[in-house]
Length: 68
Image (cartoon, rainbow, N blue to C red; front, side):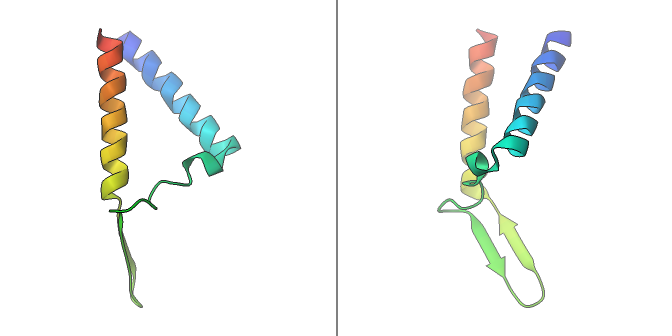
């Protein structure tokens, strides 16, 4: 279990550094075809369907690589 906490900590560190020093690298998030964005005069609704599918596939591949 400690191994997973260390991997999660390193992953969070990498994501944090990426967002801090290279925000253009994740500029694609939420702007893919299939992401739903509804803006009205009263509010905004954002549902990143395609972005979440891509993140799910990437995480699945990474977890399967670490397991084997």
